Amino acid sequence: MSKLLDAIEAVESGSDSNAIGDNGISVGAYQIRPIYLADVNRIIGSDKFALNDRYDREKSRTMTRIYLTYYGSELSLYEKAALHCAGPDGYMQMNNPEVKRYVEKIKYYME
Image (cartoon, rainbow, N blue to C red; front, side, top):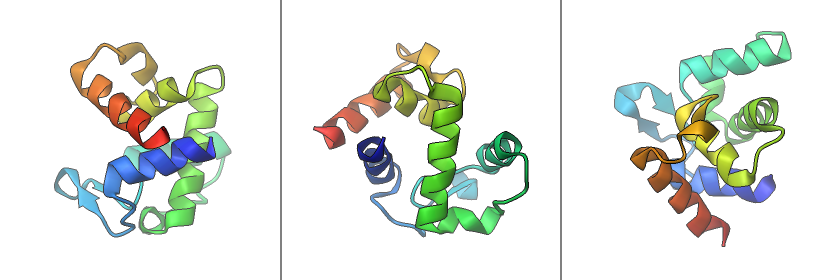
């Protein structure tokens, strides 16, 4: 999982904790959206993470690990990458051109 998290960070932001994308919706090294953060808090059963935590590399990494573990416990690493890209059903969108390109980038960084 560690190698996947490194690859996601590289693809999403070039490992820039201050990166801002999607017109300000996605931020941080893992380009986490508010809905993703809310989902992580729901998964863990508390409001542990705040919006500003998305700028903290380690907290963002932890959020991403929680999300991918929860939704992708039975999935391959590449299917987990698709989850991060396209949401909980991302692994079912592996033929979606956007998801496919994203997974190819992840593969490049993992090799």
